[in-house]
Image (cartoon, rainbow, N blue to C red; front, top):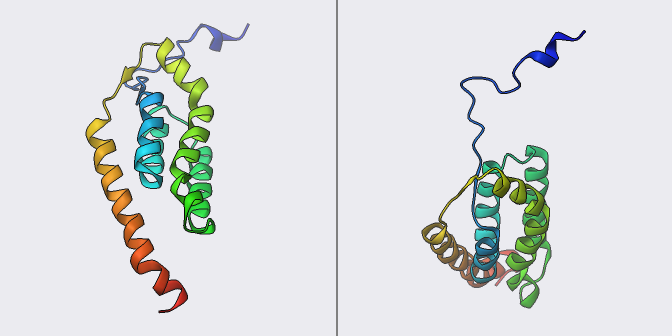
Length: 137
C-alpha cells in the first residue's frame, strides 16, 4: 500500500491564502483607465490568484504587442477594455474558486485611480511626443 496517501497534503509554514480584486471592479478600472491599469492590476491580481507564470507572461506580452501594433485612435483607446474583458474571462474560473474558499477581496480604488491617471498621462505623452519621434517631425 502506498504510504503517501496517508501523509498530509498541506505543508506547515506555507501560506495558502489567496486574495484578489473584484473582477467587475477591475473591468470598470480597465474601461476608464485604459491600457496601463489593465496590465498592472491584471498582473497583480494574477500573482495573488497564483496563476501559472507562463500564462501571466503571455498575457503581458500580447498586451504590449497589441499596444504598439494598433494604430493611434479609437482602437488603441479601447485596448484597455479589450484586455480587461479577455482577462475577466481567463480568470473567471480561478476567481470563482477564490470566492468559494472565502479568499479576501482587496480594495482597488486608490490603486486604480493612480494607475488610470499615470496611464492616461503616458498615452497623451506618447501621442504628443512619441509620434514625431517615431515618424520624424
